[in-house]
Amino acid sequence: MGKRKAKSKPPPKKRMDKLDTVFSCPFCNHGTSVECRIDMKNLIGEASCRICQESFSTTVTDVAEASGLICLFSLQLYRSQLTYTVSGSMNVNG
Image (cartoon, rainbow, N blue to C red; front, top):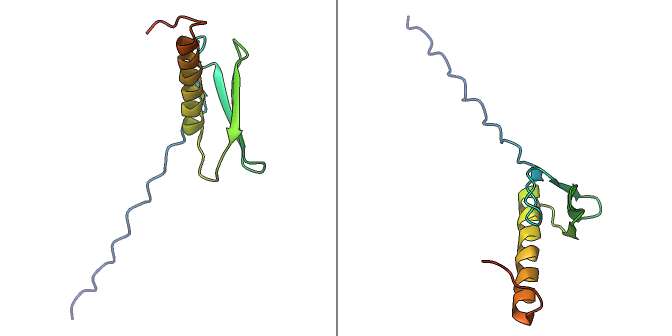
């Protein structure tokens, strides 16, 4: 009689690494000073710097992550610098 074939175990599932929730501030360039908090109950995301007290908040969707929130924070900075440059009230290097 033949030997029964052994069933192979399925490979273990890969765990997704958690993304950072602390970033460097685009205003004061201080490393790890911006903390992102996402309140899924109220659908509000907030990024705030502990050093220069700059903050940004926006509404979020159910798939929002901290990295997306910091991108919006940086985009808001870029838009505000662009507005100052066009109006002539502030000269931005770059």
